[in-house]
Length: 192
Image (cartoon, rainbow, N blue to C red; front, side, top):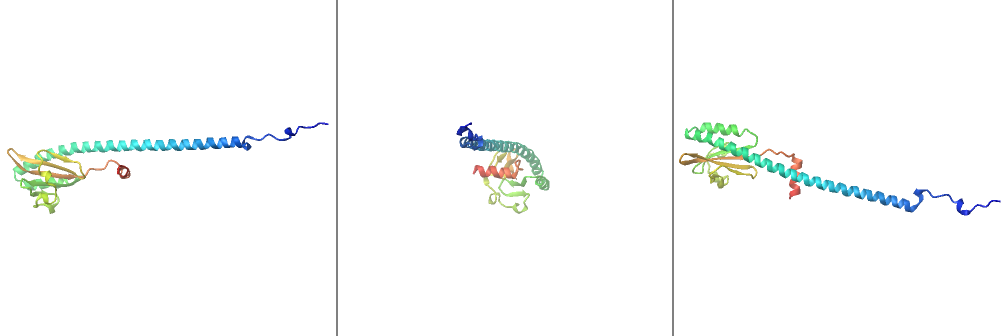
């Protein structure tokens, strides 16, 4: 007669039926998920910071480029307007203005006489009225080409003869956006 030990009658438990192993696997999976969530958050945060830095650099470069290009344009434009004023050719100045305002970004161009009255404007409603009624007086007080980066950009340049000031050339310019609107809006909302 053979007698079997009662311990051998029980079959061995498989690994997934052992609660300690099962809990260990669940804990490891949860730890892995938490690790991946934290890594994802850190990556998104780093990407957001890099994007913000890039947007700032793009805006700074655009401003520097706009300032350089518009200042050079004003310098050349003042000479053309000066020559036409000395020859008393206001029709020619008006043609210059109408041609310039057709370019993207140029909102308005004005020629203000030395007394502060608008002689010629691309917006005909502004002609023959005092400049300071509609625009800031500091634009007429500059002794060199002036650039202000508020939107729209404000530019002014004195138009001078050898021994007197003939007037002031003023231009308002809205720059083209380099960044897509959705990126510019998201950056602006984050900075507020």
